[in-house]
Image 1: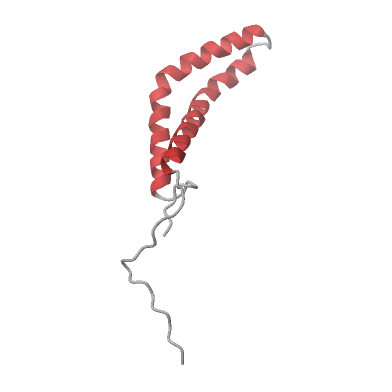
Image 2 (image 1 turned 180 degrees about the vertical axis):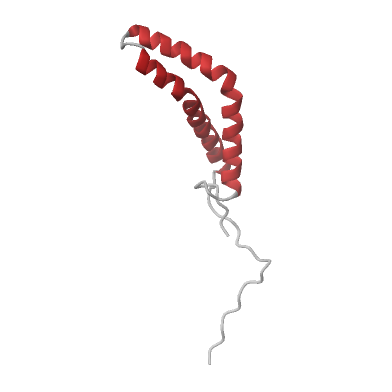
Length: 102
């Protein structure tokens, strides 16, 4: 009878091969989540401007001012949420490219 192949000891790991851009992907996720959270924080005030101001160049100028006024005090919230989301997503293996291969 043939012999069964020996299994690898539990402490043995195959060396990783190939390029794995974990840092680059984490930076891209961080910026993506940052812009998403900024958009979510600004969208209620922009919807209000769109509903109440008639279309034209005045609406554009008012929208720019509303965005500036609503983003500046909440910018740290978007930064904190994006860092937290990226960290938790990488830790739990939810974000593609940042999952640990076992």
